[in-house]
Amino acid sequence: MGQDSSRAPLREFRDRDLALKASSAIRKAAAGLQGPVKIMDFCGTHEWTITHYGLRSLMPDNVELVAGPGCPVCVTPGYYVEAAVRLAMDGIRIFTYGDSYRLQGPPETDLPKSLEEARSRGGRVEVVYSVLDAVRMAREDGEESVFLAVGFETTAPATLAPIRAGDAPDNLRFINVHRLTPPITRYVLETHPEAPIRGIIAPGHVSAITGAKAWAFIPEEYGIPTVVAGFEPIDVLLAILEILRQVREGKARLVNEYSRVVSWDGNLEAQRLMGETCDVVDAGWRGIGFVPASGLAFKGEFRRYDALEAYGIPELTPEAWERDLPPGCRCAEVTLGMARPTDCPMFLRACTPESPYGPCMVSSEGTCAIWAKFGGGGLAEEVGRELGVI
Ligand code: SF4
Image (tube, rainbow, N blue to C red; front, top):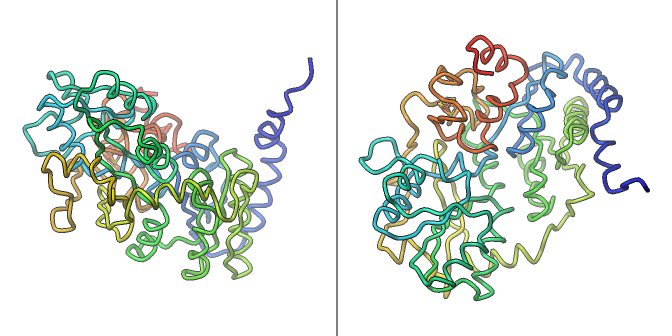
C-alpha cells in the first residue's frame, strides 16, 4: 500500500526534532530582549495548538504567549442569546450550533439563561451542524424559525450563501451576530495600551477568507511584527521565531507563514458574498466594548431575513451595550490577554467545561475551556490536579 502523501506535511509539522530546533532558535532570538515580549494569538485554534502541545513550556522566561479575542461564542453579547431565548419561549423554533447552545445570556433576567435551559423548559431549540440543515428543515415543514448565527469571517460566508442564492425560505430568519476580526485587533491595540503586544499571530482560517492583506495595517500603523500562521505546532513555533527575529532587528513586517492555505487576497468570492448581503456596522463584543466596523448587518432585499427586525426587537446599540459578564468572571481580561484563566478564582472551581459559569468556558475555542481541558503551560494542570478535577 502506498504512503498517504496528503498526511506527510502534517507529520512534518509535528516533528519532534523540528520542534526542538525551532524552540532552540526561539531561545537564541529571545536572548537579551527586554521582556516580557508578549505575543498574542487571535484565534481559538491557535490557542488550542499552543495549549494542547504545551508550547508555552518551550518559551524562554521573557516571552509570553497570550490569547486574544479569537472565540466568536465567547464574545457574542448576551443580548442576542436573550433575544433567541425569548423567541424560543414564544414558540418560534431556534436553530443554533452546538457551541452556542449552552452560551448564557445576561446574568440578571427571569428568562432561561441559555438555549439549553430554554429547551429544558419547553422552548423550541434545535442544534444543527450546518445552516443547510436549518434551511432544509424550515423548507420542509414551513415552521417559523430563527437561526442564531454566530461566527467570524470563516463562518459568515457559509451562513450567507443560501440567503444570497435564494435557497433560504421566508419562514427562516437570522439573528446575525457575525463579527469581523481585523477591526477587533485594531481595537485591542488602540484601547488597551496597558497590555502592550509586541507580536501578533494572525488567524489562519480567517485569513483564508480575508487574505493576508487584511493584517498589513498592524506592522504598517502600529509597528508590530505580524505572522499569518497555520495550526500545527511547527507553524506556531516558526511564527513565534519570525516575530522574535523582527523584534530583535527592530523591524515590523507582515509574513505569511501559512501560504499553503492563505493567499494575499484571500477568497474573493466569499468577500463578495458578505459585501453583497451585508453592511459593515459597529457592533458589540461581550466583555470588550462596542467596536467600530466590526459586525455584519443585512442590507437591501436581504433585510427580510433579519429576525430582530421581523420580531420588533431593537438592535443592540452602544448606549444599550453592557459587559454582561456574570459577577466575578474575568473573561474580559482573559480575552484581551491581560489575565490568564488561572487568575480567575472560579477557574475549575465554580466554572468548568461541564458547567460553565462564564462565556470563555462554553465553546471548545474559548481560552478558559482550552486551559481547563489541556492545561495552560503547567499552572492550569497544577490547579486541576490540586482540585482533583483533571
Ligand atoms: S474561568 Fe469561567 S468565570 Fe473565570 S474567566 Fe474563565 S469563563 Fe469567566
